[in-house]
Length: 164
Image (cartoon, rainbow, N blue to C red):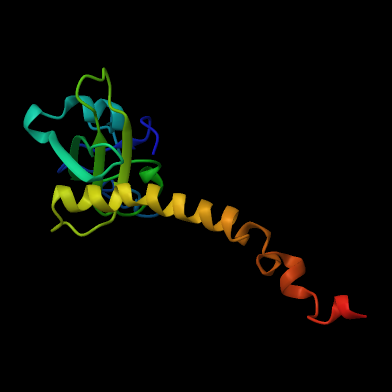
């Protein structure tokens, strides 16, 4: 996720549709105004209190345990929500900000259940790297990258086409 994505502060969301004046169609879309607007993911991360940040270890590395500082809060994404009749559901907003860095490093959004702990969320979030590494190895070492069954030709050519 990009640090420029707009989000609502935790516990906030867009304003309800305007009241119907009795003329025309009733308003259906949620709204914003100059006093009630979202902020960027980076601005929200920088505004989180110090107690929101926890150091979490997610796995053993080759030389040492992999750990960093994280914060996770429930919020609503605000991107283009003014085109929607209802606010988006709440989801996890996760930020990694290593100790000593001048700004947050990575941002994620997740629909994991609200009952999950920060360490569980981080373990699942960081598992993506391992999955991508395993997939790269499958492509390189086992030839999965050259498997023609994944493309149009492999799916649509008869099995005995090359035997004639």
